[in-house]
Amino acid sequence: MSWIQKLYETYEQSKGREPLGTSMLLPVSHSIQQAHVEITLDAMGNFKSARTIGKVETVIPATEPSAGRVGTKPPPHPLCDKVQYCAADYPEKGGAKPSFYKEYEAQLTEWCNSPYSHAKAQAVLAYIRKGRVVADLVREQVLHVGQDGNLLTRWTSDTQAPELFRVLTAKSGERDQGDAFIRWHVRESDNPCTAVWEDSSLQDAWAKFDASTKETVGVCMVTGEMQASLALSHPKRIRHSGDGAKLISANDSSGYTFRGRFTDDTGQQACGVGYEVTQKAHNALRWLIQRQAYRNDDQVIVSWAVAGAPIPDPFGNSLTLMLAGGAIEEQPLVPELSLDADAGQAFAKRLNLAMAGYRAKLGPTDDIVVMGLDSATPGRMAITYYRELTGSEFLERVEAWHKVHAWPQNFGKELKFVGAPAPRDIAEAAFGRRLDDKLKKATVERLLPCIVDGQPLPRDLVKSTVRRASNRVALDHWEWEKNLGIACALFKGAFKNKGYKMSLETDRHSRDYLYGRLLAIAEHIESRALYVVGEKRDTTAAKLMQRFADRPASTWRIIEPALKPYISRLRAKRSGFMFEMDKLLDEIIASFVGNDFLDDSKLSGEFLLGYHCQRQILNPPKTGNANATEDTPTE
Image (cartoon, rainbow, N blue to C red; front, side, top):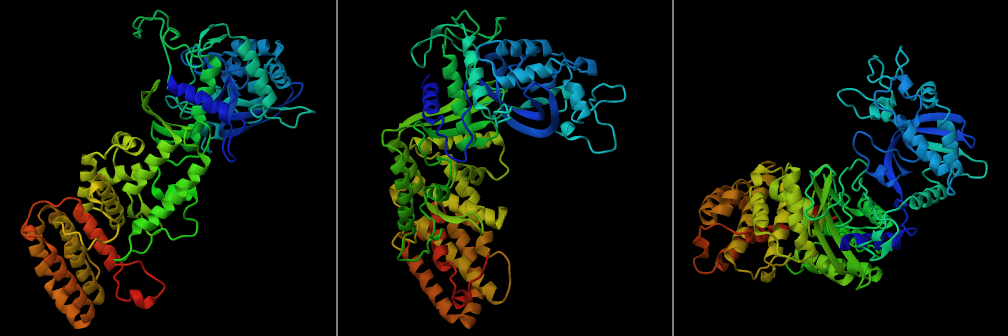
């Protein structure tokens, strides 16, 4: 029960201290629903106006059964609810569904007759007892009836369908207007707040009344205390307002669900949780997911500090981390690379600055929780990943992930940075942009322990990204550029013991690294020759990159003769350039050890590191000097 305890503590720490610009934590005994219709009343319960509001998430009072209502006889909400519940005249107007007005009116009456009554609730009760809800909404052209006076289920006119028909969900091609959810405005002379969902005094009144109705007594396994009210059911709508999956559930009385040694169908024998505790814990989880969770379809992964301090997002790339930490406000995103400078130094300074900002707000012993949720069925949700760490542990592991997997990234003309890619981008680099949700979920789940627990990267994932980055002709240019940076980052991190740098290592004489440098030089020579004569096409090195990765020695014997005409052209028109290239080629070939140059076995991802670093040196970032880039081919 550790997860629910941490969420309960988070609620207690954060309620009333929510950061600016974020939503408020839900009060106890409240839920969120999408409202479609707004009705305004005066303090005496007289109708004033009504309008359609589309789909607007609204905080409403809710009972324990109504917060998770399902089935053929769903219990009513106490105040805001569907037309089917609020309107006594719904059956008279041809309502297709059973009316639950009596149950709704009885529950609202019980609240209004209690010591915890509220003037707004009394006004709503006085109005619904008049039995004119549907009639008033039809008169205001919020609901629509046919010539027979019954509510329409289809819009057959040639004119555009009314807004309500566009927001209600169709079932078998029909839309029941009884599903329209109503929220209330009540005008009081001494209260400037007319919206019932914003009135804190009404929320407090309902919470006190709801608590007074609880009777189940037992030990709460979260607080360890004897509770006057244990939860009989637990909230749903955790990930979004339409989410029907629950984290804690027990059913049913028919004997269908296996309960092992337990004899009841409420789950109390296995998991006794206080009503207030589960309400606060689920409200905190819902609030955290809305604020800062990673989402992929039904998969949700959220990390937070129990004390409420800001923490780095483990699922962001290095750029987002440093922007959030204020480490790169007025500095270039990509430092210029040269033979004498390591881009890692500039990146490390920015990263250290960002992490220092987080450490200033987050104590070394503060509790950090990382929690993954997913659901295989519409009604059941599982915790797929759960870790509790101290603040110092969490920051150290996030910092280590970004340092170890840092590499110059090129995500397009408008987004270039040095750092680690995000898990979402890694999944796309490994399996393509069109990968299905299941594969993306599985990939992200496999990467999560690498970030949070410091586990090694899955080797098959590294190999897949390297393979796709090598297959250059199969990708669009900007997709290949993105994949290249990600593949280099993963390979560098997977083999961190080899100490790869982000700048060109002229003293690294490994076969794969040198072959990567050779490929970059061959591409550069041909690109320059094509640029000189104004041609635009792929180079031989680019076309044969995949073959080069599989059989480097034999492929080089194809690429090198193909360079001869371009070398001759450049010696005639760019003799100084070609002199430097000849010198560099001789230097690299002479650096091969033993028979490595003749070895035709498959290259590892290290060749991409040598290729990328050599390419950066040959094509440095453009400066404001036009002459500096006069002969530089653009891609």
